[in-house]
Image (cartoon, rainbow, N blue to C red; front, side):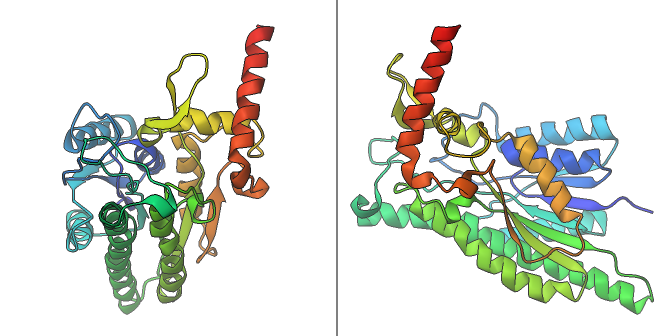
Length: 322
């Protein structure tokens, strides 16, 4: 009997790499997806191409876990690409048991000076806003929506074939990697939150369609996680060094200052463990679950500046104590 198969979009780096590794470690054959399009506004300073990174991830998983790992590229901002990605994966393995939609981009795009531009909600120029909205909606919402459409179509086909053959229909699953930004707005990232919040309704609708075929659909909503995407400058300056903190460092300081229950930000492996667990629960569907260290539990986002300052104060106290 062949191994179960999991496709993880956006799995050549960051959270996606940790997620696809978790499935491989649990005996799944996997599809490592990378963005094959051009993205001049990507803030991550990758030193190799998506294709090269995905191939390296796939090779590592084959060596470490003895599974088959297929590397596939697709520009999910293009209308047909998500359908083609699913079809290629299905054609190669002849089955599809779990799909994790992880691909995502921030709304920040480069201005005329070539620098990443950040505007507050009421200050964003019309043309710039159109670029930001096009960027996030094409990948985060439309791309993920289409990926789910096609994946469920293939999973339903498998379920119907199994029923016709008199076989028991096994549990299959689709998981969106969404975000707590759906309820924790940042004035310069509202387009990003909008694109991800739209997935919440997709989860609810897809769960109804898929349930009768023993397919569950859920969303995992990470808080801030240390990845290449959060290694970009945050605009907050360290008063001691006069250097900008990264996004990860800024939220780490906020966490230390009390912005959430756990005094640290997440690691990709935190999300990967939850992602694998959520896809294995056959009686949970249509759920939007935060994995955020308690960030939304405390709901202190509007007071983030206070928590940031408190985190910086506590760090200075520890340094003096050392």
